[in-house]
Image (cartoon, rainbow, N blue to C red):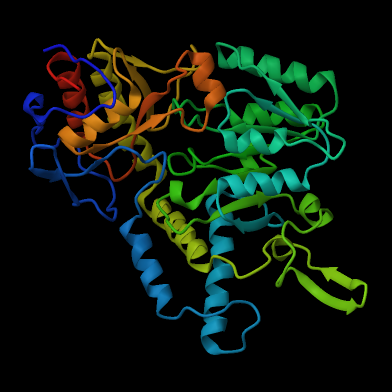
Length: 436
């Protein structure tokens, strides 16, 4: 039966043949929490959850969960406590900085500032940046809106460059923009959260530096899939979120050159950021702020979030990016081949010359709204995907998907059974199912 869409959409279970694929050929590479979770289907049955929404929030690695559990047994205040557990917790928190520094191969004098996530990290970067910022129109909102915020005089510091149809022409456009007038910063996403396409960060850094600008790299969608070297890639500022790298608790980091961070006013005013404070009847006096990471980490930090990120960095290092890359390359090829075999499915791409993608596949299903597709996959096959415009509205609009699209994404906890189940369910949807 041809699938028919009307709103509101609900799966008619009589038309759904639950896809139960053959035994997996490729097992997950690492253990993640919730890997055996059972979810209900519209038929009344249950099935193991196929999590294909890693790009939104990756499941916690079991090694990360264990590290957090261990830290909880000795959890206490940090930095100014004389008690033994306070000292232990402080050491764990500060060691987490060094673990992150080593993981991204940062400079020894780079600041490592813990934040609430990538969005918070980029807002902190915007806070410390003076001058114009060059950015592409294909960015996630987190790497677009902070730069578009008006200056006190109402002017915008964002200089938005339209990405070309090829990566090569996009690099030419960025170089031309940077050459046209001074800019403080080039802010780019390392891997698209919509298509997974990876940009050549080293070349972008060289372009920025050639024209006197620094480069900020949003690595939220790259850091769990590819090795990153702040030094070798020539990165000035790197940001990412814990929840994209198998670490929960709403934490992130900004790693980069300390001079702008030390010169800027504290991101937040409060305890921990100050070395000395006095008061008079007309206000605070003699306020002296710390330099370094503490200057921008006022208040009680997310200690467990930082510990979780460090544990994820350690575990990914143990698994090895060579193994991760090989695992995800096989799964990506399986997914691409499977989607290409479903006539109604169109894969999303930004560039015609891109050759590298992480485990992200954005696609549209002809004749079906994205939310209806996502609900069908969940209700009929126990598959979790993302639908909508993925906080990248300008990109989806220019690609012609103003109503959004569907996104499947995966990582080290994914096996080929998950990919097979998705392809089978989409095939069923486009050839037999009915959505009412």
